[in-house]
Length: 253
Length: 306
Image 1 (tube, rainbow over the protein chains, first blue to last red):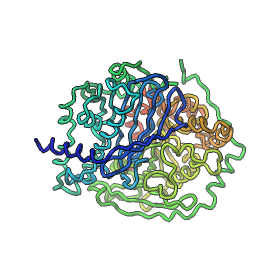
Image 2: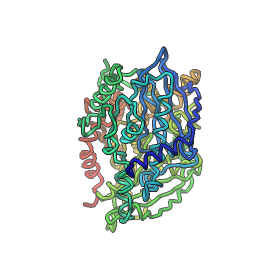
Image 3: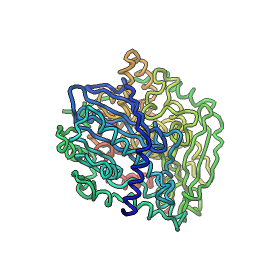
């Protein structure tokens, strides 16, 4: 087994030691349409409790579903209304982000290079595990059609799909937005082992094991920089693969 | 089919609007700013400082402050105001272009949330039933107070100050310029949030405005209280007091801050103003094309060191 495979097998093994034990709390405030929303708390590795917004369409399922992996930043919004109309949606906060920030609170700037001196200590080892836990939770829901589950976000979506086969579509906006922080780190620590650590998180290496269609912005779709146009195109790509109608955010009311 | 350019948004201005804000700023504590250089966020071109100051209700507020290294002479100052869910990053790009740049983290943002932390979602509706206790009251003051602090920092020319931001940063840029007309000399305002708030709640299902929809879903009897509160915080009610030249840029398919509200802001401004619209842009508001114009606009009015 390569060091790469061994490392990720170790992540799976660590995660398996901590049952998810999800607790769903109805979120009446967000149930503002033909869907029901829940706050979800569940466990990740090292017993850290993470958080997600879950929305389930009204009616008889099973429904297509989308896992929204966290963006780079402290805050993730709840899933958008138009997504809630069409999918079971689970929007995850990884450890350190708002709603999942006790006892560890992420700093911005700072998170991207935390523990980067070694793959064993790099914070993204646990963050990817949080995303894997989110995938396991979504696939476990009886309302979900397991043949029509997509994952969206930045390259955390690629790593998640690579480690948890079963997704029907993967849409990534590209690399995690940590480049400026990495520059700061390398300026302060020119002999850092960051490059060898980040090799374990190389999305191109992970993508090789994904059999589902992958849309990567910048490679498979060139942004027009008219973001309403781009959003419409990216929404349509996922909708077609998961068997729902396309919808624009601007017109979703 | 929506036609944002023909829509009209008006906001009722509370009779005691000016008095409310004068009272809010009366008796603020000494900001007592403290600057601490941050070596790992500084380089051979820019020095980065962690800035702390005291604001409304005695809350200690954080900011990043960046200046070009070894700069000679007083520098123009620029206040960067963050979006609703974003955390301010050190504004090194502006410092590299010759500005003393301050990026404020108003209360509730990381580093400023020790004693006030409504969370996200949460800020927009925090204590919204009462305009005196509304969570945004201190948040607005923190932003304006940051400009006061910037004006007093060593090496900053208080006669060459600007504000810039998009979304919440655009809306609060208008508020800051209205409340400090003697200080603000230029405003760059993208996709402004917090303008025409009541109308926007009905125009979009996107966050943050969706937070008010959700609040009223649970508390329908609070509707009139909510609409009374937000009128005190609405950018359209601040706009007539803006004197500085302002550049506004909008996406005409913005689902987050409906373009109808940005166009209403443009109409409500009576000073020098410049409007750029992008028909197929959403909340990015043409940023890919407009940012060089934003830089040129600020340079024209604030004259940074070359």
